[in-house]
Image (cartoon, rainbow, N blue to C red; front, side, top):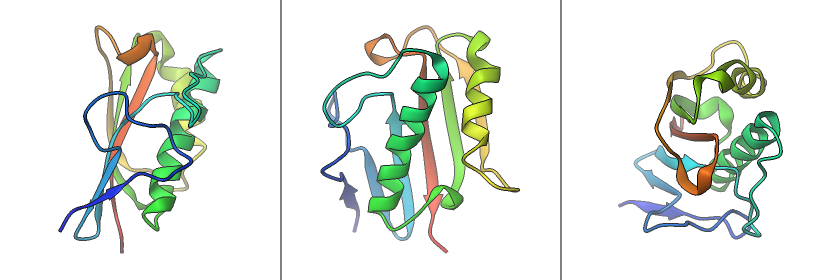
Length: 125
């Protein structure tokens, strides 16, 4: 049976979706943007924006009893590939020797005009 994961101190969905679904030890994380629990966007610069996105993912992982080390697959959407290096620098700091599989690409537009959105799949065990 699938279980919705929505910690009280996390950003509320801005569309009809569940931020994370836990099913049989696998956590499916919806795309996260730099929106905090108070509904404020943190887009001062791409590093700040990426840290807030990773913090949002971390809160969802923690609520499911997991951590960044449980991520096995990640998708990074960027408003422009010029952000690629800066996002990688912040993103990479959250992982040890074996980061998750992933892809990163630019898209025409992201919700609320943000520059980065990250989704993922984590597995317990």
